[in-house]
Image (cartoon, rainbow, N blue to C red):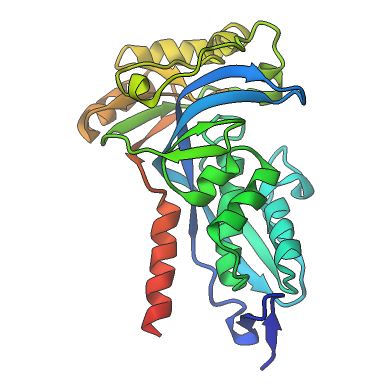
Length: 307
C-alpha cells in the first residue's frame, strides 16, 4: 500500500483511505449584523466595520481524496464555472501552498443562495481549506489557512477561524465577540445582488464614522449598503418591509437576503410561517458564536485521539 505525502513530510492518506472519508462537512451561513463603509483606500477597496455571526444552517460539502492530484467539482452549480468556483480555487491554492501531491473530488449540497449576502461561496472556500488541510494532513495552522483564505476573499478568514467577530479593515481584521442567544428568520428575495455593483454605486455612503463595540451593543449600527440596494432592487425592499412586520429587519452584507432576530424558536417559526404564507422563500436558524465547522473539527480530533 503506497503512501501519498504532503511537502511537510506527513503522510496524507493511504490508498485504502481514499473513499472512506467523504461524510458531510458544514459550510454555514453568516449574517452581517451591521455594515458600515468607513472609507475607500487608494487601491479602490473599501474600509469597513461589521459584525459577523454564524447560523446553524448552511451548505454541506463532501470530499473524496484522490491519488492523482486532480481537483474536481462533482455536479453543476448554475452560473458558476468550475474554475471560478471558490471551493475549487481554495483546494488548488492549498494544494500549492502545502505541496500536496493528492487531489480531491468536491461535492456541494447547496442550501444557501448565490449572491444572497450570507457568505455561501466564502463559506464553501473556508470549509474546503479546513477540511482538505485535515484530510490531506497538510499541517497548516489556522493563521496560515486564514491567510490563504484572504487571497480568495475578505470574508473567507472569518469562516476559517469559525468564531463570531467584530471586523474592520476590508473585513479581515477580526476581534472575537460573543452575541446573546437568538433565532433568526432569513428571507431570500428572488434576485441576485452584485457586490461589485453596490460598492461601485456613486450614491453609496463611504464616510460613516467608526463605531465602538460598546455603542453597537446598545443598538448602534446600520447597513450602509441597504439604501442603495433598496432603490435598485425593489424585491429586496419588499422583503425588508415584509419582515419588518415581525421584527427589526435589515439586509445582510450587500444582500439580497434580509433577516430579523427573535428571542426564541417559537416566535421565529411563527414569523416565518406568515412570511411563507405571503409567498416569501426563507429559512430560520439559531445564531451561533462558534461555527458548526469547529464542531466537526473537534469530532475529527476526538476520533484521532481515540485511535
